[in-house]
Length: 347
Image (cartoon, rainbow, N blue to C red; front, side, top):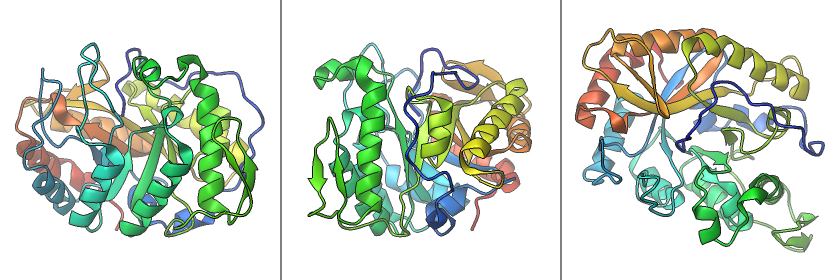
């Protein structure tokens, strides 16, 4: 999940945009999608990892040594997902290049070496992407991975990327909606007739192949992406928020579920997830403590926090332990022994 400089612990109120055009019913194909089912079920929480699978406190880039073996180890231990961030350029003022490799390319590499773990993005900076090529990449990866791709989408929080790409930073909210409409149209309609103000269009004479393995690539909002929460609840398949303080979890869960109920009906399920840095402490009883972009806790404190989150209706948490002090293999083993058994992935 992209680091935010002032992460709001609850859903921010953004004025509603134009009425959503998406169906207000959950998409039936998500009930079949293997990656979605592995992570998201009502009343239960699962755990994923934000890459890199390496600790590197105080350094902008990981070495990426042994990363494939670490991914396979995470899968064997039962983690639900591996999440890739979208950081195209190194900005010394920002000081972080995520997992170094471009996320869609890297997902293809990981898909060939894993079998069941879900593979996601936290998130693709949609306003800076050409949505037609992104649609082709996403449906191809979903097919090649056996239906394990989860496409997290964000508006990005790095101002410096936008002038580098010749894009107006202030237009990112509108560009997100425009690009998302093109993405959904191409991936879910046959020979669509559409026109975008920014990203071209078609008279219905061309079709995108392949389509998604189970009919839809799950699209998860990573942060609010400059949108109203109402728009996200109508159009996206889930919402991944920065992990808030424990006493704010209930309000966050209730507010998201209420917006989903309004958008999709009383029995609708669109999952709520959390994400952020984890500084795993050696003392197992250290409770939740806020740090920039995440939190620190011992394994028991982490488990306590996740139990509260699960009770509040949170379905998944994506942890990035790169700021921890221990070697990454030790972190995996500790979480695998003491935390994962309480929050297993759905097989």
